[in-house]
Length: 63
Image (cartoon, rainbow, N blue to C red):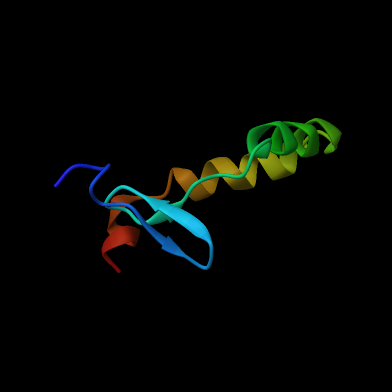
């Protein structure tokens, strides 16, 4: 079954492909970019916390 055959609707939104995620509305990524551009820059402390969250030992994932 290909993506074209596996389309459906849910609440008026078209579901695309096997993942069943609704299509993004027009202008979605432009809106995301505007919001990101308006946000203040991260502090060094915030950057360190984010880095630490992504660089945790793999033993933590197994827990």
